[in-house]
Structure formats: structure tokens, C-alpha cells
Amino acid sequence: MKNITIHEVGLRDGLQMEKMHVPFETKAAWLQQLIDSGVDIIQIGSFVHPKYVPQMAETDALFRQFALEKSRPDGLIYSGLVLNEKGLERGLDCGVDMFCMGVSASETHSMKNTKMTVDEALPRIIKMAHLAEEANKSVQVSVQSAFGCGFEGPIAVSQIERIVHKYVDAGLKNISLADTAGHASPAQVEQLLETVLKIDNSLEITCHFHNTYGLALANCFSAMKMGVTIFESAFAGLGGCPFTAVAGGNVCTEDLVHMLQRTGDCTHVQLNSLLNLAKETARFFSREMDGKIYRTGEITYQNK
Amino acid sequence: MKNITIHEVGLRDGLQMEKMHVPFETKAAWLQQLIDSGVDIIQIGSFVHPKYVPQMAETDALFRQFALEKSRPDGLIYSGLVLNEKGLERGLDCGVDMFCMGVSASETHSMKNTKMTVDEALPRIIKMAHLAEEANKSVQVSVQSAFGCGFEGPIAVSQIERIVHKYVDAGLKNISLADTAGHASPAQVEQLLETVLKIDNSLEITCHFHNTYGLALANCFSAMKMGVTIFESAFAGLGGCPFTAVAGGNVCTEDLVHMLQRTGDCTHVQLNSLLNLAKETARFFSREMDGKIYRTGEITYQNK
Image (tube, rainbow over all chains, first blue to last red; front, side, top):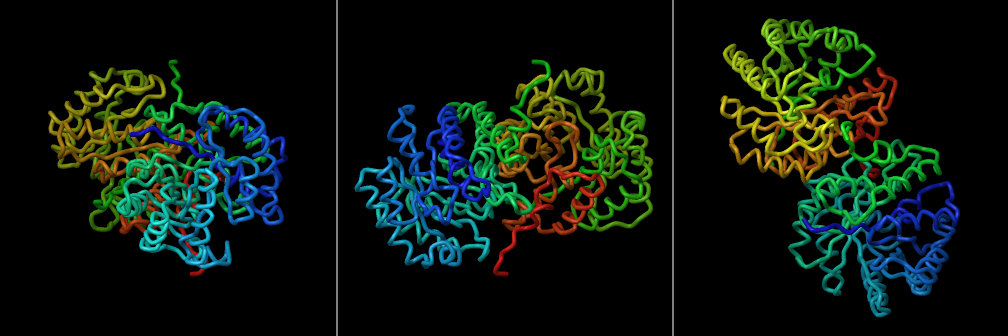
């Protein structure tokens, strides 16, 4: 099994739904702890209008401080999510290394999110991706709601195939398959990846799972068995709306790293740093987070 | 992927650590709900001395009522755990269909549990298994702590191999690999099953996982990929000590069934009956249970 790349998205996908504002200094401190943990890619924020997502108001300032002013460990990549050309400009201005952008596979989700159909959104995203590449930036394009949609239900595999084909035809091979609604199950992950990898088996696939129904770790394992080596995850299992019955957060970074380290994978990440950060996050929000290992601790033995 | 057999062990492994006594009538009502859900095998209890495990005091009476007096759905099997010859006698007396018994792969665990070394316990268990077979009963023999021990830590694969060899040599092919401590991770499950199935690929392997570290569903999926089709699970995710940091319960039956049904497996089980039972269990114990789906509900779509 190849070593795994952790793309930490807690500061973006994790925080964007949180009603309690996390001050700049706290975000910066958490970001520093993520850097110290040794994760490979850190998504610092998204370039949306602060009117729509107030939690993301500090994205440019955080990027400026960490990507332009401070030194950083070798190889660490800072990613940012962009939704439109204005966001791309902002990101180019403040030191984004990797631009993440995408379309939804669900027409309903696409209309609600962007007021565009999938076929209207696709050429626009592909054009933005090319602009970012021309500026010598890495690009990751995504297919959101790839495993089902909270509005529409199951999404035809042919729809995901069609979008991936368009990306590949446009020369975009770094593709994230996102389970926005948390509907994926491990056997389904296997089936979809088999289909997608048939299009082009040199694709660099990232998987992005939510733990709404407790399946995120099982889905990661299933994806790994299919050859996926890059995962988007959030510290403490942040993400989703904390005011619903059960928060449908991202797969929890420290729980994923803990699982992988049990068999000698992902040893470049300092699990303890992540556990401390998760504990701090739980204290900050004054609630139990979705992550499990920050509560149980790593597996230990009574005789040792 | 073959269809999956659910061996429900909540009434035994789930309840044995619970301090609050569940009255006979409640146990009988829960058992009836399990029967109605359509699970394949139900473990009604263990034949231990009530002094040691007061929660199991009603085992004989429950068996008598359900296995001897009441009619039951075609094919439904009632299993009981036995630790010694006395338990076997009691079980033969009250209608047990399948006797479950086993040894621990951990010497420390074996000594603490049975005051015997693994090599002392093995011939005794094998003899009991043969006695049960002579009485025309099904037998399942287990290897406890097969994936690691809370006292000793990792257990050598050769130790599990050695025990399985002894079982196979004794003609015992229905073998449960139990992750008593919840230490298993999916890649490890794969490796151990590969080794065990090399001994004899006609073995009927059952896997028994605990969710202490959030890995139970991922472990089930991994085992399924290796060809395992029988799982021991507990409704509501019961099991383990509820007074520790995080209850290390059994893999949750309804969460497992929910995962499997997403891709058309395990459709013979009525998920709704299990969700109702889990809700009732949470009310009975006045606490949130480890299961997730009884809180989120099944995946649904807003447009439908």
C-alpha cells in the first residue's frame, strides 16, 4: 500500500458551517499546529464573499501571513477553494499554491450552489483551472455530490463519468471525488473508482468523505484498496452543521491517521499534535467533536 | 459479494458489562424485536455463574421460553456462549442450537479469564466442542484477542495460526476471530484473514469486531473483501464498559446493516425494526448509544 497524502480541509470545509466565529489568532494558532503535525497539504480557506460565509473572512490575511511572510517546512502545500474568477484573483494575490475548484454532479445541488446547470458550470471551472495553471499554480478539480445528493438521491455513475471525461479532455488530471452528503458506502466507492479509473488510470484521484452515517473511515479504506492515496480530512472531524441530529463532519484527520499508522502507513504525521489540536477544538466549541481518538487516546497496553 | 449473515450478540456481549440490570421481560421483548427484524442468528446469553455476571442470570429461562416453548421463523438459530462443561449441560438442557466457545490468543487474557494457559484451555474447549457435536448441535469455536490484547499489545500471527490449526485438526471449521480489545485495523484484518484462510480455505470464518477506536465498520468491510460472510454485532452498538472514556461496544448491528443495504446486501433484515430497538435501548439506559443510524435515520432525500 502506497503512503498516504493528507489534505487537511478543517480550516475550510470544517469551519465554514460553524456559527461561532473563530478569531484570526485562533485560526492562525490552529494552522500552526497543523503545520507542526506534518500533514501534507493544508486548505487554509475559501475565497467567497464574507457576506455569505463570514467564517472565511480571514482567508486572504491567513494566506498572506503563512504563505507569503512566514517560512514553512519543505514540501508543505497551501490550498484554497475558489468559486469564481474574483476568488481566483484574490488567491493569486495572497500566495495560494494549489487551487481547488469544482462542479456538482447533482443538477439540484449545482443550481442551489451556483445558479448554474452542471453544463454551464463545467466550462467556467475548466477555464478557471487553465488560468490558474497559466499562473504556474497546481490545480485540483472536483466532482461534488459524486456519491449521492441530499436533494436528488443517487446520482447516475454516467454523470460522474461524463464530468471526469470533460476534465481529462481539458488536461486536468488531479481530480477530487467528493461525498458532499455523506451517502457513500464502501462497496459503492469501489464501483465508482473502478469506473473512473477506466477513463484514465494515470489520474491523480483524491477522495473526500463525510462521516454523516459513520462510513467515512470504511470508505477511505475502500478507496485505498482501489489505489487512492490522497484524502481530504478535517481535524476533530469538523464540518457539517453542528445543529442537526448528528453533525455530518468530514472524515476526522486524526482518526484516519490513527487507522493508517496501525499498519505502518502515514508515519510522517505526528498523531499527538493532531490529538492535542482536536482537544483544543472541543474546548473552543464547548462540545464533543465527531473524532473518536482524541477521546479514547491511541491504543495502549496495560502491561506497558 | 455474497449475502451476509448477521449473528446478533447484543443480548450477551452487549449486556454483560452493563451495570443496570435489564429485567427478564425487557430482555424477552428485545429478543422478540430481534426475531422480528430477521437477523439470522441470535445469541441469547452466556451460561456463566450469575454471581460473576448477574446480567446473564436469565439466560436459561430466556432459552427455555424462546427455543423450547415458542415457535420461531424458519431458519432462525439461537446461539449461547459456554465457558465450561457445566455451561454446556445447562445449554443442552434449555434448547441452545449453536454453542459458541473459545480460547484467547493472549496468554495474559487467557490466565485472567480462565486461570489456564492457552495450551491448557485449547484441549478442554475442543473436547467440549466435540461433546456439543455429539449432541447434534452446531458449534462455533473462537479465537479471542486475535487482533491484539489490551494487556499484551500485538499478538503474533503465528499464535492465531497455531490455534486455528488445532481447531482444524479437531475437525472444527466454524471459527470466529474476535477483536476483543477493538485493536483491529482494516489492513491488519486483511493480513490475518489471508494467513488463516491459507490453512484451509473451506473454513467458515466469523468476524467479531468492537468499535472502541471507530474502526469496526471499516474492519467488517475489509473482512468482507476477504470473503467473510458472517459477522457478530450488537444492536445499538451495545457492549464494552459504558463507564470508560468511550464505550468500546460491538460493531453496531443496525449501522452494519445500513452500510450493507446501501449496495443491496443484507436486504433480508428489517432495518427499521433495528432502529426502533436501538432507540428503545437508548431510552432504557438513558444515554446516547454508540450506534449512529438510530440518531441520523437512514439516508433520505429532501426532494422525495
